[in-house]
Length: 508
Image (cartoon, rainbow, N blue to C red; front, top):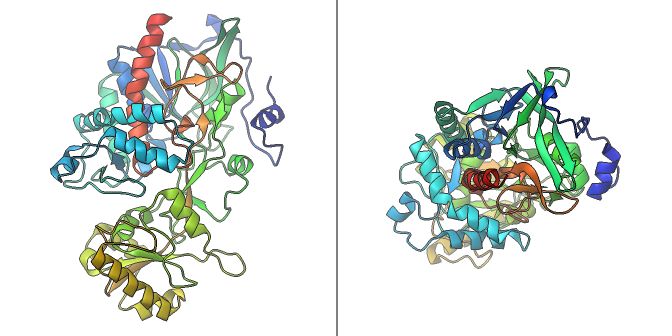
């Protein structure tokens, strides 16, 4: 049996604090008489990755596909994300006259953002299935905003479309409906406690899972144990661990404790840890991404992401200490979050930067209306009024705006190299909000091959019948993931997984 102390030693991080890990069952108990049920394929998690995996597996001919989720609702983090989806050569992009994009250009952007740590081959495989993923959404009834295709942080081409609902639930709900029609079985409040594994001289093989059925998050005393055999395997699509503050602190002690988290409360990573406890290899666990759209005036994912989809393009972000811009507002998340987190008062407490843009053109936009209503943004009739509200040096703020307006006119930003094509001349009245990074996405997770098979830490070979896609699979993006690519990865890997399962079933 692998103890908690053994696990942390394997991670190379030392023993600090306490971290709840599941108690392992006897990993070789694969006697058929011990199973409560047998299915063909178990998928853990019901977000983008889990939904695509389930539908594509069914369409590949796998009969009994069961999706397990420990929470009480479908969708996980995917359901509450911003609903952005990066698709090179999507119809809206082409209608805008952007004809020079491709999967290869997207991958080049991702490699640059990954800062030498990304997996180019896997990113290419994902990008090659972007249009397949888009078509899956359209065929499932997902509605994208008419004419909406934007250039977002770190990308060099406008390729980010967005669902009409403004949240990923516009995708997960439609895919769930399709899955139900096509025979996928969804089981909520089913928390995976452990994997059942056999080990021979040929290697390890996952036989099934031990599950708490009737689990009510977060009460560990709820539910009862059932054992489910999976003939063709188990697919981990359970997402990241950003809500597991203890684990985050262990793997990344430098993670700023002042950062809130955008994730749903169940994003605590138990399935990833359980897989590691059974020999799965971890990778990049210390690479935890912070989103640069958070507001200290609201909790969780919030509405600031929507508001700043205007702010980063039309306005500027300034330091309350100096009144000067602090970054290229359209850079990637790591660049922006790092710049924001440096803004501190003398006592090292956060000096929340301020983003503002013109109010009148967007006063009826739902993103502005809701933000002002909920008091995470405010309107101002002058720069003096704005400066007074946030205690910003007024003279320097005015000078900053004057310089920025000059950059808009020349379409060049000599300060930070920002693309100025969507920037506007700033003039009152303004709408402004405070910003601060929030822990958002785990680049680390389970190491897989480029076909979604989870690798063993013993021999670096695939653990038979164990797969992972989406955020649970680490080592894909490197140092940072570009905006709008989580949806792409989760959906696209469902197509890759279906091909892998077909190959592995034939070879079994």
